[in-house]
Image (cartoon, rainbow, N blue to C red):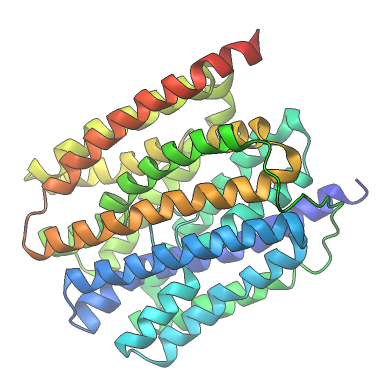
Length: 388
């Protein structure tokens, strides 16, 4: 496609601007709710739940629109939502405004920053556009590079949060994410239109939907509450936590670059099993550790282990479904992931509120074990036949 490399660059700049904003918001939002507004962990959990449910609905809607209406137009619409939400938070701290803003902006934090936590409704559409701009043999590489960039710039955003007050962070996030919108306009795509009433890849989509739901439930249990965990258990201030968030985000971003090598040596299923299984074992230690150094080491490593195989998983889904159904497949998967995470977020918010901080980590490990089993059950045969 003429100008394909230039379009990839424009898409990368757009994604970088959103990632910086997301990193700032992810760090600031728990402090805004817990320390500035003096709300409870349960309130924070309910806000995250609202965001997860709304992002699930938006993800499904925009996934269908990408296949039927057009990828670029859909991406522009969804891209406007993040700066609009952060501006709402900056303007008003009323609780109903926060609920509206988290819903619009997707402050669900149910995924890593690389995987589309804040602003997650745009993630499936960005993947569809990236799929359109790349060929099959290079797709895992570009998924890795773009996801690495997301994590790296999100880590920078978390570090930049040191420069602003909690409320001013949301103004800065608004301006930065708005700048990235300009880079979408020059992009031209050779788009195809799918049949809205037909879904020929429904069996494969169903398998990814079930594993995605379990992924979402496990993410909802832990991911939104890693920063609150250190705020509540160790009383770490924002300026210090921004440095730790930068380190964790940077390690997560760097781990993404291992995805092509993992795929070549282990394949899709074994890469998922190794990285996420090891991460689950480490998280079992976090609530029983009484040493800040060990707790921080786990915080630095586990997000990296969770996302290291993410580009492999993304590429596997794109390859296994019909090209005209990628947007809907990703949207349905996101609905399953975020809908499941919504209940998990409320559960952990309640457990944190009554000071039962350890239970979510133990449930996470059990759910992850079941999910790894399902990856082997659903996809091992498909992977072996594809490599034969």
